[in-house]
Image 1 (tube, rainbow, N blue to C red):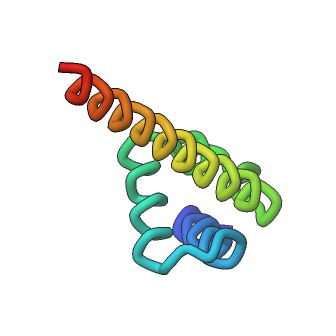
Image 2 (tube, one colour):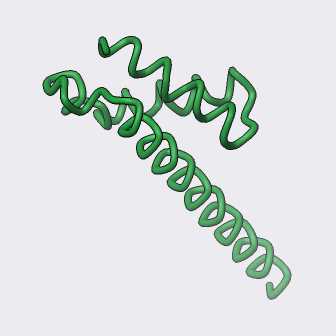
Length: 85
């Protein structure tokens, strides 16, 4: 599949597997592109498969969940620091 088709597949999978809105899934894929996540996929056609799209959708979603959890913990620490002072 083409690089663009592959990105569309990853986006579609994010909406189907994780019940994300189209906008949220697109943002996740665009942000990953901006961080060079898909550079190898652009260069190597063998990485642009349905199976790889599912793996990448899972990895992107997991990364997002981890970032959100870290952000929540940091916010909680800030609140606790303010309460302590």
